[in-house]
Amino acid sequence: MQHYYYILNKPCNMVSQFKSSHAVPLLGNLHFNFPEGIHAIGRLDQHSEGLLLLTTNKKVTRLLFQGATPHLREYHVLVNSKVSQNQLTQLSQGVPIRTGNEVFYTTRPCSVRLVDPPLIQFNSDYIPSERVPHNWISISLSEGKFHQVRKMLTAVGLKCKRLVRVRIENLHLGNLAPGCINELTEQEFFGGLNIIDY
Image 1 (tube, rainbow, N blue to C red):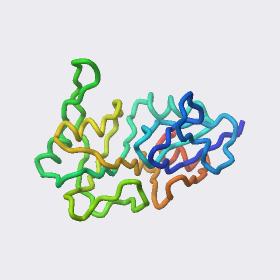
Image 2 (image 1 turned 90 degrees about the vertical axis):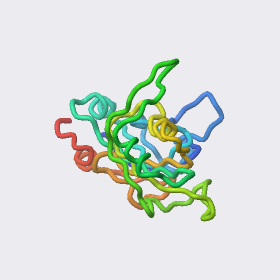
Image 3 (image 1 turned 45 degrees about the vertical axis):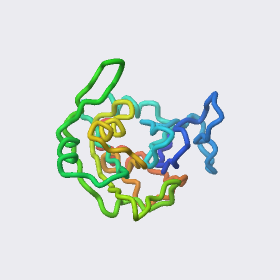
Image 4 (image 1 turned 180 degrees about the horizontal axis):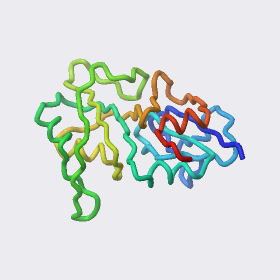
């Protein structure tokens, strides 16, 4: 059976689903003729943007998230203030985030750095004023608790204004515009994810 593989730049305020009981913008609203059985791999929340993987291959979720080697994901995040070296160090070493009622989890060490300018230069609902202090941060991690990046920023006193996933392993968003889609071959898709046995 032939499977299909895509990279989508998910726009802000669109949910990572094709069906919903709520009146929200869906992936199916994009002007693209998706094949039957298509689904998203590793969702982005409604207010996050960027790289989203789509496929008809149901094995990908297991291979990507239940394999022995965790997969690296990179996010570019706009915060509403200047970021100190101490905050960068805290984020990179791990911070406690809430994962339930009175339940906290300390995030694993990860790669954190300032990016100026960010890799992404697309239009957005939020455009920072030059008069208001702000920074873009790159956060690369291999775990994905619920709203983890946003909670990590809150833990060090920063507020997320935009969150864009720019990379999963060696699959990059590049200059793909919001709402646009690139189709990949099976070899390009699994090679980019560093999955050998598929």
